[in-house]
Amino acid sequence: MANKREFKKYVEAVGASACNEMMDAFYTVEGADKDAISKAIEQVLCAVAAARSNSNIFFDKGVKAFPDKQAYSKEKAAFFNKLFSKITDDFTSQLDAALKVFNGAIPEEAKTRNKEAVANA
Image (cartoon, rainbow, N blue to C red; front, side, top):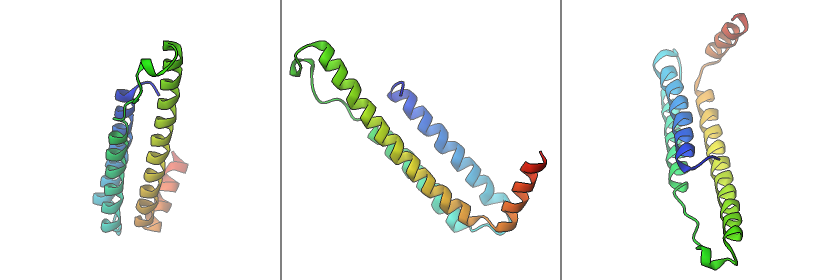
């Protein structure tokens, strides 16, 4: 992970892309379960908000708590690697759950048409 700002931009972009596709299906796919799609969009938005909020955590120890600056830097880097790994895993699992809800809302004939269109492209 590069930094918090880049992580937040990544989460926003992924969430916006997923919501955009879901909203497109909401308005264009005939026979889609609109309530389930709305629920999936809500889940994506909650996942984005949680990931952004959780990324605002700071390292709670100062340089004086370590024998030298190198030990401090090493511990701080390990802390953030572990933190962002956990946040990313949580975000991914929440997004996967939302996509399962969304996929369940799309009628089978629409899924079949999409698979054929991709195969013919």
